[in-house]
Each structure stands twice: as structure tokens, then as C-alpha cells.
Length: 48
Image (tube, rainbow, N blue to C red; front, side, top):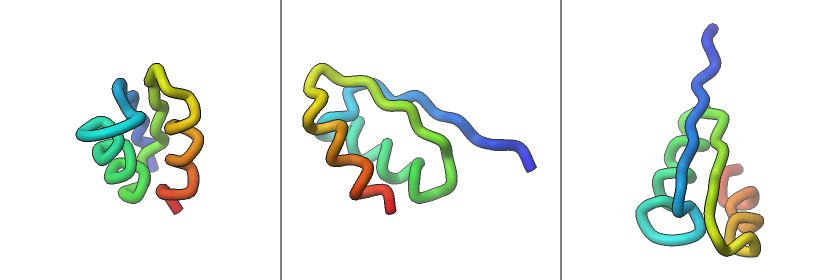
């Protein structure tokens, strides 16, 4: 099976964050980019 990979910018809050979570929960490998690193670290817990 082909692996789905996504890159999401602005993933520390708002639409970017929600999109990253949605993609992750649907089996994508998600790379996130944002200015606030602390907020990105919280995404790991939300993708389980």
C-alpha cells in the first residue's frame, strides 16, 4: 500500500492544527511547521 504523506503549515493553532489532527487520524504521515514549537509538541498526544 502507498503511504500518504502531508505537510501542514501553521499547525500550532486553528485550521492548520485541526487539519494536521484529521490527516494524522486518517493514516497520513504528517509533517507540521509553525512558529510556536511548544504547541507542535502537543499535537503528538492529539493524534493517538
